[in-house]
Length: 159
Image: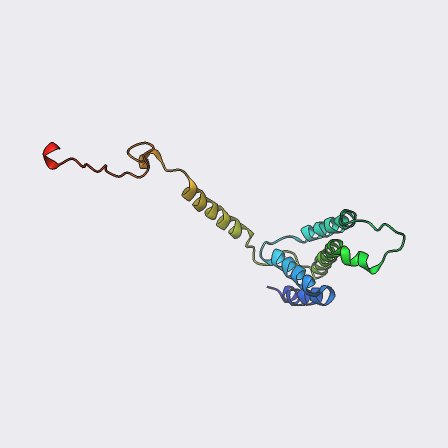
């Protein structure tokens, strides 16, 4: 890990916490996790920043536009989804821009392929446990449930 990447890793969550509160800290931590663990490239952060900013007006419309010409304080309190989308967009753009200025791009641990291999192995294990029994393992009497010998109540002389 380079010195610049270390500085960005320490300073960025602190900055998002100062400007965005606890939700800003969570967004900053998610951004850094995506960068270090999933090895998401800088261009993906730029693209996601644009998408989230473009989604903010739609969030305002879905939550309801004001019915009067004067907007009160309640309007902002009722439209926190758009507020969060814009904050996340700005945090993503700030991270991508800072990483670009510092000349950093996916130099973290490339755990993406490892996580994919683990997911494939977990999926194989789950499907093998959930798969129906093979014909060689089927019960001796079809549809009788567990194989249990029938009890013979006849006296030994009649057997």
